[in-house]
Length: 107
Length: 107
DNA sequence: TTTTTATATTGCAATATTACGATAATATGA
DNA sequence: TCATATTATCGTAATATTGCAATATAAAAA
Figure 1 (tube, each protein chain N blue to C red):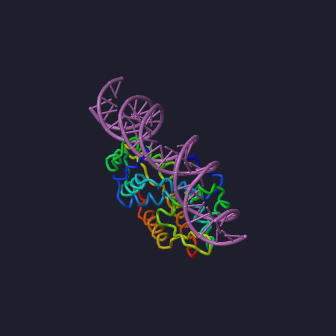
Figure 2: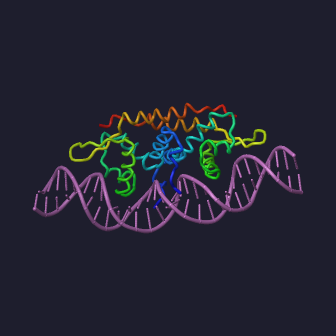
Figure 3: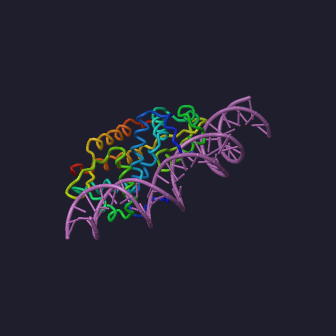
């Protein structure tokens, strides 16, 4: 019914799935890649670079923010989104753990 | 409109997002983890272990299959799903590349 | 062949996601 | 203060996802 039965799964399974969901849209991949290439980030740049409407970009940024991957600060006059280093490495480790823990000698 | 504007993004951005989408559900994480713990996999086991209905499990398996992460063979009388090692490591590298290529010294 | 067992497909309902126009909120500059 | 620029929120439409009952298919066992 469109609702994931999260209660059936472990916390780590749900958390990894949640993180994957944020990466499960090319716009959000593109946004993260773009932010990392800049010294700072102005949302309006993203609208030009990505090619989606400003409200849509704002929503995607919000999704990324929700799992703690972005911290926003002010730099001069414009709002600046930055990748939260600690959270980023946390997720990197979660994915890495998942990939390396899978036993591939099944059959 | 529920439709991702994939044409705006690069092939690698779309592919990573597509892979992340498969991991973006705890049931599919759980299925992959379960398969890796077994020597073989019978879908009916999954129904008991995961706790979702058989058609739902079948659908999730299909999603995993679609990006080439599963190869199915026959072992005795039962269908056996196994993780495709080559594809698995390919995805692992894609994610790893994404995580390590992001520059965190933004601000 | 018939029954049993295991998996796949179909059809449908409920909820989620994606996208954007319109508009609001916020901050800077004149 | 008022205009301008930037980001956030609201409302809405279209499509996607999740889940399962019912049913179909396929293979092995009786």
